[in-house]
Image (cartoon, rainbow, N blue to C red):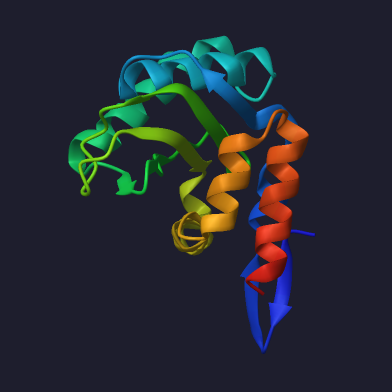
Length: 167
């Protein structure tokens, strides 16, 4: 289920936008650009985007970072961009093998990325998803579970449990 009703308001379920195939644990990268490039490469491998669109996705993500950095503190960043080649919003969760400098406001290196992509026609949903990710990142139990997850299934289970706690 993509949406859940909460007191008259529709709330997007983040866990419905993340699949195990879009959870990448222990990426071996050295910079934000390299992290975003590696994620784009894996999205091609997974058949989410075409090889011909990989460089364009990377460029869109880098352009977004140049406008305003997406690190939010607590070792996390939420890179996000509109990408017309996708029919709906999706979230990629990536944990880095080593933290990298991501110009975070708290000056801590980043090792968790929550990448949000989707077409501009769902811009309102895009903003709601960004807010939901930002709230969940502050959950200390989720932070611990995500950093300890041995498999994508364990990471997705931690996300679902955290969403259930924050209904």
